[in-house]
Length: 367
Image (cartoon, rainbow, N blue to C red; front, side, top):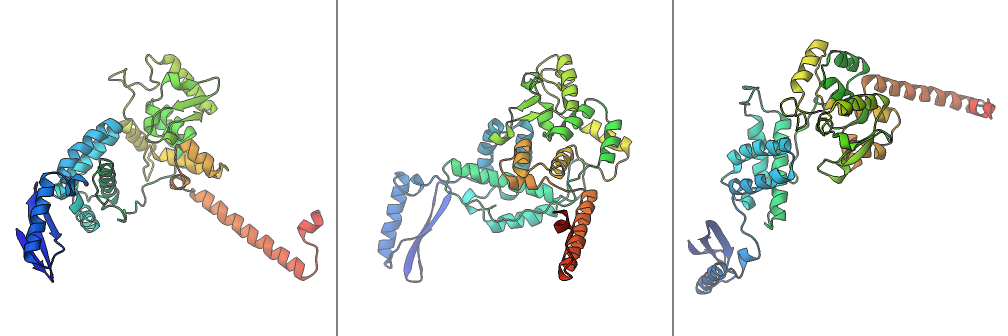
């Protein structure tokens, strides 16, 4: 600790509140550099400069506690639980690092190290997936965004870091698969799946439908929940959805259409066991997630001619780019598109041949 020479300029280095301060004095004279060091220490102690203008960033392990306290108030329990799990992983890699010391290079090292690890949960021994790494990166990015809002001048190290591509995860359910699945699904899964397929609602949005938010005269479902204003929206019931919700609203004993069996005062939390059982009974391969029914709705809507801005509003998206990620044409529609292109090519060739030989085209004849 003290002053040292780097080229022609003297630098000083010292510890302040557990932080290493290493700066150029701007002087070529050692005595002047020592005075600059003393002044810098005095300014820091009297809180007149330096860290008074810029809040001292804490270590990531310390700030995680602040971030999770904010997340608990801001996010749904399921989202908060995900951030908490991701923070446990991030703390293991970066816990002792200061927020302003973590670089994009360190994040890249984290990506590589994390994806080589093995899982220790119910899938013990299997490799960590790219999707799992992506979720941790998303939490880290959100943590830094919140740190900036708290007044810390830190650069988000996740910016510019590419996420792993998640391939083969999204499934579009065919009409045959839908019929087989629903025929073996138990209640309330069967009704929940039908609502997702007909409205595009998120599973947790269906779980939390309240009787008070149903308007059968206007055939609308109001969803007041969501992370963005776009997620809080009204949706129109199909005939089948209206029949389902009318019956369940009449039988409801509290405000929730799908109340928890264990605690009727709360909405149902999951139908995972029923979903997995329905998949086994229907013998569907490859399997799909309940959330894939929402992707199926989006793809079918586009194929039916629904424009993207309208679909974005129905899905509760803030931009069309997000909606595009939900649109996955089924194989039969891809073949249909190829057939349309082939027909277009043939008709174009016929028109060109007719013009070159002076024969009236079909369109001219019709006129």
